[in-house]
Structure formats: C-alpha cells, structure tokens
Amino acid sequence: MTVPHALASFALVAALMTIVPGLDTAYVLRTAISRRRGHAHAAALGITAGCLAWGVAAAVGASALLTASEVAFRALTLAGAAYLVLLGAQMIRASLRPHPEVALDGEPPTGSSAWRTFAAGLGTNLLSPKIGVFYLATIPLFIPDGVPPPAMGVALAVVHNVIGIAWFTLIVVATGWAGSWLRRPRIARVTDRVTGGALVLVGVRLAAGAR
Image 1: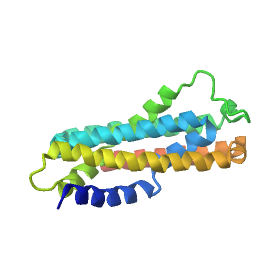
Image 2: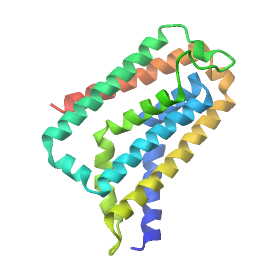
Image 3: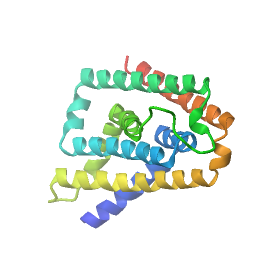
C-alpha cells in the first residue's frame, strides 16, 4: 500500500463516519440555527480540533495506553458522560427561556463569544474516548510499510479533519439558505430540546457503559 492509496482509502472511511448523523452534526446544526454563522464555524473548528488531538494521540500511542488502562478509560468515559449531560441540560434549560439569539437580525445572546462556542465543540470530542478508540482501531490499518507511524497518523487525522470541515461548512451554508424559517423561536426551541435530549441520553448511556 502506497501513501496516496492509504490516504484515499482512509478518506473514504472518514467520509462515511462524518456524514452519518451524530452529535457533532447535531451540535453544528443547532448552532447554525440559533446563532450567527461565525459561531457555527467556531463549533465546527472546535469539533475538528478535538478529532485532530485524538488522532495525534493515537499516532504516538497515547490512545493505546488509554485503552490498556481500564481505570483511565472508565474515568475519562465518566467525565465525558458528565460533560454531555451538562451540555444537554443547558440546551434544554435555554429552550425554556426567551431566545434573544434567534431574533431576525441574527445577533447572538449577550455575553456569548465564538471562543466559548469553539471550546464547547472542542470539549464534546476531547472528552469522548470513542474518538480515540476509532483512531486507534483505524490508523494502524492505513500505515504503509516503511512510513513512520506518528507522521502517517497525523496525516490521516488531517484528512479526517479536512473532510469534517467540508461537511460542516455545507451544513452551515445550507442552514443559511433557510435561516429566516429556522431562526423562528419555536423552531429554535425544538432544536435545542431535541439536541439537548440527545446529548443527555448519550451521556447517560456512556455512564452506564462505564460501570
């Protein structure tokens, strides 16, 4: 297997993983609906930065060490579960209050910042050991003979991130086309509740599986 062949093969796998509906897509979609486009891009960058961090960790063996340690894996899983439940609960709580961020002018709520949105997106992936396990399971399969594993692992993680950015950009642009309808307070409240409920359910499932 050559390097170009390895990158192309991994790109196919990464693309399939990216377009399957999940928490990342839901979070970017929700942010695009309820806030400015810049916040949605910040959320996408945070998510992909988390993926890149896990990819680099897997490339240098950190994810292998994490998987080998049941205690460390369980602790990180519980931390990630708690974070997801908290984030979901905040979205549900926000849906019960008036939404100044969904006004027709598209202004974000007072006190919010793109950096906070970026940090929230980053946290959803950094605290998800499943991302690390994905990289640990797939990266070794796409490292050609004679190629340094760390360098190839980082290259594969970058490929995954490029695909992710393209997918999230498509979501943000498509949401912008329907912005006047999607930004209605009722639609935003429903989006918050559905996304928040999904985050809480996933967090609870992660916590249950970590016992």
